[in-house]
Length: 227
Image (cartoon, rainbow, N blue to C red; front, side, top):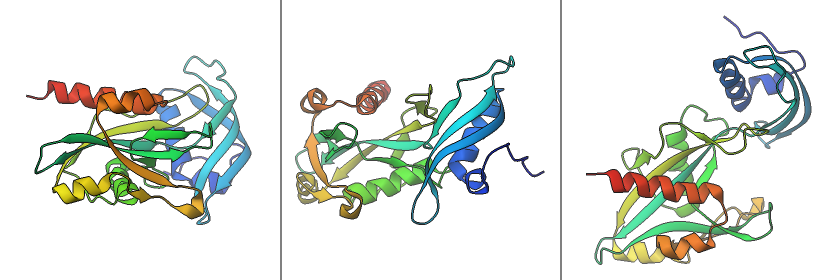
């Protein structure tokens, strides 16, 4: 049975996977979306939805109006990556340093990225982001969930929730050492990334991201509970 269109939504918006996921989550929580007014839609060169700012008419399960504005970004993945030097046994977190437009400073982060159109395969997106941002090939068997569900960052406005994954990779010494200072990124998108190998005590004082700090916490907690 075809889904009934919502008053005010454009066809392009209605067909966008991340927008459809947002509507389904509202329904699953018993809310009713009566109408939307797209204030701004940003699309990628291929036509897929990047962001949408909406004014909405929506009700909670009791029929009370919800706040009007919603920023549709879609869900994302973050991969806490621990690499191990096969010869020396040294263990360090593989982190990325890049400058961010939100504050203009250099942020210390883990590999991460948006699901965009691949809303049903967060693990696959995590594997792809690892390859794109670090050059490392990992398998589904090496990437494990750190939380049973995605965690929201700012649900008062933003639909984004993060799937947190972990990965432990044992590498030959040469490959392990080559990661330090390696450069990746997409210059045409203003993305300049420098890789760093850091232990937890070195990294934490430099981290200004709630997502990254939470990633550390989830990873270390899971590792501590493993037999």
